Length: 75
Image 1 (cartoon, helix red, strand yellow):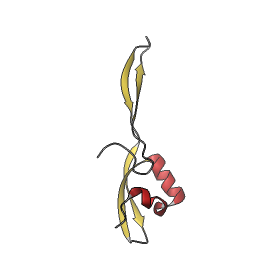
Image 2: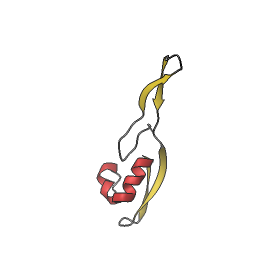
Image 3: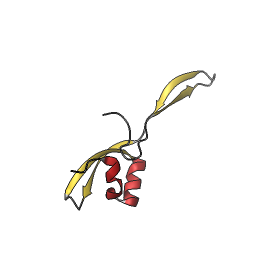
Image 4: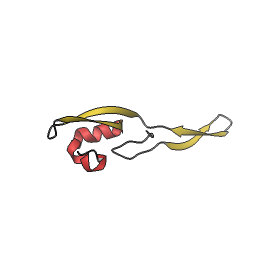
């Protein structure tokens, strides 16, 4: 599975490491991704998502059902 958040759709970014002499070498900025299970009470089941910590905070604010159309795991 690729490294992106299933809720916010954020991906890793690219940039540069800068040394003291200002030499630039390429690097990647990775997201803080977690695999988390969320309980859906209406369907009485868990769903497992690979989301960033920012995505977890959004789900805590708005609830899982608000993001079900984005997730696409409705069965």
